[in-house]
Each structure stands twice: as structure tokens, then as C-alpha cells.
Length: 134
Image (cartoon, rainbow, N blue to C red; front, top):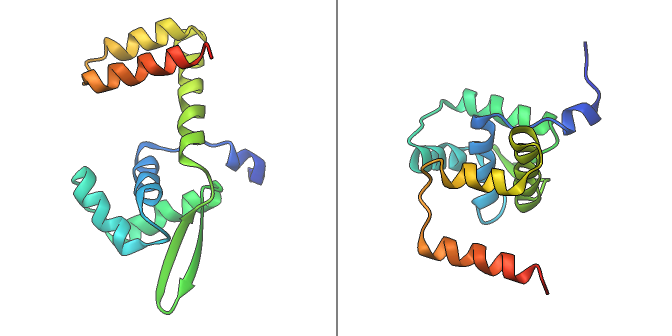
């Protein structure tokens, strides 16, 4: 059954699609696929053939996350969705899914997950919480 564009837009990213999107979001400007391939290798230790990356890029286009254009023989990709907004939405969805919308439970699960939390991270979180009262 064919899905509507709206249904595709609501899709969440797979783990590998998220890795590709991170490369696109973190690049300064529109990014060619060869640069995505290089960044995946450098950032994640993954080597994908160009055809595999092309498949991920096609899925991201279909989901409405990126746009592409061709300049000469090279395709360039640019994000259509904002990274910060996507991360916020994913955090909210995760909190709702796993902790029944309880922020303290969600934060406790993250803290107890074994994630590395630096003193700088702790201070930033404190500043965010204190800034909510203003």
C-alpha cells in the first residue's frame, strides 16, 4: 500500500539514516555524497559503498529530510529539516514512549544509562533549568 507524503514526513529516522543526516547537518553548506561517505568513515568508522549511501539519501529525500541538486557530475544534498527541532521532537517522543511523559524518570534513565556526563554538561543542564524560571 502506497503511503501519502504526509505519512512519509512523519517517519522517524533509522539509526543509519540518522548518521547520514548528522553528516549533512554538521557540514558547512551543501554536501556532496563523497563527503558523506568520508564523514561516515571518520565519525562512525563505517565504510559504505556509494550505492548504499545513495539508497539512504533516496530514503531521506522520500521522508522529506533532504533535497538534492546536480552541479556538473556531482549531486549535492541540503537539509530541509532543522537539526535542533528534530532532536527536540525525538527527545519528546522518547520520553512519552518510555517514561509515560515523566521528565524526571526520563532524565534519571539517561543519567543511569552509563552515558558520559561531564561537569560542563552538568552546568549547562543546571543553567537550562534555572533559565526556565525567567
